[in-house]
Length: 304
Image (cartoon, rainbow, N blue to C red; front, side, top):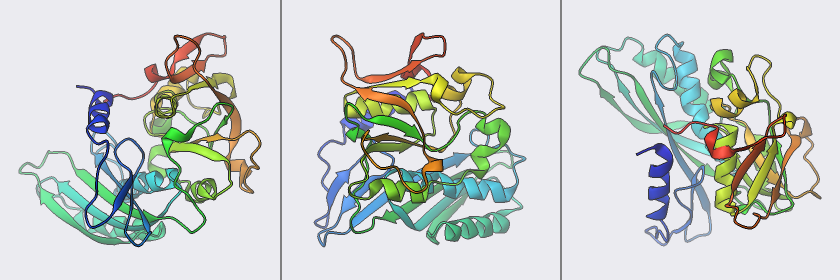
C-alpha cells in the first residue's frame, strides 16, 4: 500500500471523531495539523512528524542541521494552518552507542526555543545495532490568536488565485531542506479574519501532488501555469521542480480581490487559478507545462 492510499484510508475512517473531555475535533487526519477546540473555547493545533536517517537526511549531516530540520518540519505544519507554535515533545530512536546524543538534544532544544515552542518532554530509545538508522519524532502544539481562523486545505473556491511563498526544486542538492525557515508570520497573516485566504498548506511532497490534495479536498480544479512558478536556478526543469518535494513553502488559495500582506515579497504569483470541474472532469490539480501540454498534479511528487 502506497502512502497516498494509507492516507485516504485513515481519513475515511476518521470522519466524525469525538474528542474526550468536552473537546470538539475541528480538523482531524487529512490536514497539516489536527485542530481541537476545548470546552472553554480555546483552540489547539497538534501535529507530529518523523525524521528518518537515509530518507530525510544523510548520515554525514551535521547534528545541528538534523536537529533544526526535526523541529522545523512540524513548525511548518503549524504555520500552514495559520497557528503559532507553543510547545514541543520529541522522541528519538538512536543507534547503539550513538556518540552525539547530548549535542543532538541541546540543538533540538535550542531550535525549539528559537521558534517559540520549547521542548517540554519526550522519550528516548536505542536500537540494538550500531548501524541502525536514527529516527526522530517531533510533536508540536500550537495556538491561534483572537480574530484569526484556522485555514484548512478544503476551503479553495472557484475564482481564487494561487500564490506561493518562494521558489521550489533542488531542495536536497541546495541544502534548502535542512535550512528552510517555516513561514509562521505569513501563515498568521493568512488566518486573520478578512485576509481572503481560503485554503493553504505547506509543500513537502512536491507542488504537483500537494496542489492536487488541496483541489481534491476542496472539490475543485486548480490549474497551475508551470511557466509562472519560481524555480531554484540549480533545478533541472519544471517537472523536476514540481516533483522534488521538501520545499516547505506555503501554497495559498486567495480571493482575487484580497489585499496582499505587507510581506508581499513572500507571496509570488498568481501562479494558477481555481475553477469548477468541467463535465466528466474530476477534482484535482492540472499543471500546464510551458509547451502547453497538461499534466495531472498527482503524477508529480512523492508517494512513499
